[in-house]
Length: 393
Image 1 (cartoon, helix red, strand yellow):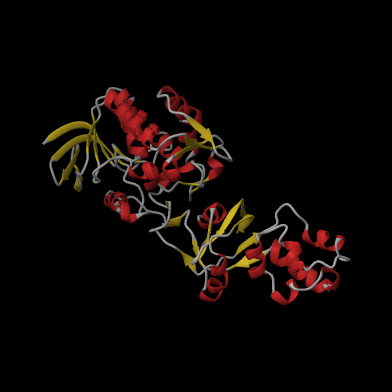
Image 2 (tube, one colour; image 1 turned 45 degrees about the vertical axis):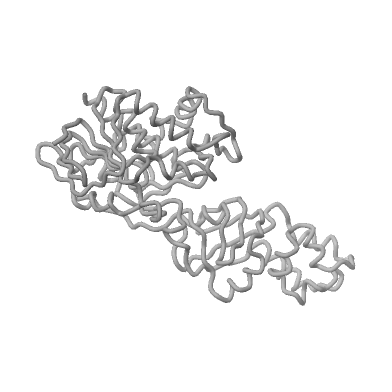
């Protein structure tokens, strides 16, 4: 039986941040990671360069059934705090767009930084060690495929169920339920859409074409690129919308967000150029050939009727897609939903039902937008729990 102060299950972004923070407070920490290496999702993020935070992160960029819950943790550990840590380790970075910060070199630098900080605090990391069971008497008793542990506190940082090929499982939800916690409805988030067969066949002709768009879903809208794929719709705008989408909802897409097409066409009604060629000056030609009816696209502007003009403006400013679904957890960057935050302390992430039990990161019902927000939640929630455990010492 190995005795320790804290067992953290999961060596991802949240788990490593929690470990180094608790370790800095003098606590004895062991991380149990079922994969052979830590930080696997960090390494693949941002195309291998890790979009490690967003300078504009606030509670408004997160989805939860309890939307105010994340405020405390996000205020307690800000993007500036993580930037200071990155700078301390000499990691060069840049802002790509919309406040998104990426490593200049490699995501490996972020993992190495976290592991170095953990090492400085004597945190022990056990990889390829799978938890078999957790129980609680006076302390927590954890059985793995390699050992038995006793600890005062247990932190669940095992993530959601997105990208199962990387080892993601519902372990964290199972433990939460075991100890009497509710799990809010889960679904894939930041995930590409599938289109119905007829529409998929039509738009598959322009697979790989990307366009600047505003995509609206319900009351939310996002200004980013939409990418057509052989199966449906992707790109940043669509990934953002997916976290707010439910079956049966419409996606309303404006393909010319900075223009008033009706006004532009009215001003050029005397032109003999065909509508298709005219629109190709604003949008990719392949896209125009698919989305604009051929009989109208072939007409010269001076031949287009008022009804046709309105039809084209509606198509390009308010095109309605009704997805048949999404590509699911296999392609989802995150899991929406999770451990109900109404049963956690917003300051420390500790369970209000079981003393010494903590939930952090993606396993919790807090989901960020695309663009570094989910990493910021990992850092903030991990820090909140690490500090909360640490100051009890």
